[in-house]
Image 1 (cartoon, one colour):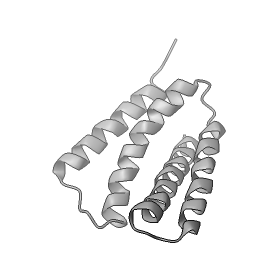
Image 2 (spheres, helix red, strand yellow; image 1 turned 90 degrees about the horizontal axis):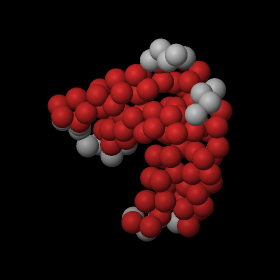
Image 3 (cartoon, helix red, strand yellow; image 1 turned 90 degrees about the vertical axis):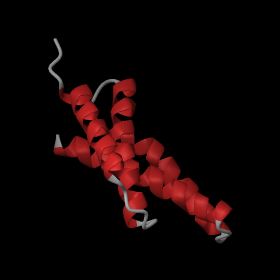
Image 4 (tube, helix red, strand yellow; image 1 turned 120 degrees about the vertical axis):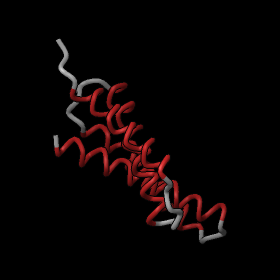
Length: 108
């Protein structure tokens, strides 16, 4: 279970980090290498989820979506310095509950 969580977190950081670098390049006129590195990190994002042991692509990506939401809230708080409000945290908690149900509910 810890390995699954680690892979989800790494994928989320790659997606958000790569997207953020491209955002900085295109929206904030940073050098081209920001975009190039961001693109490379986004390629890694496409690879990292394949390391999950879950057999279903759809389930893995659906569950990852919930993890991404939590990481995006944290990224906004820690990197962009935008403090999440109560509703951000409630929404993120609901997503984690949903992810947990999707991945670890007993199935027959």
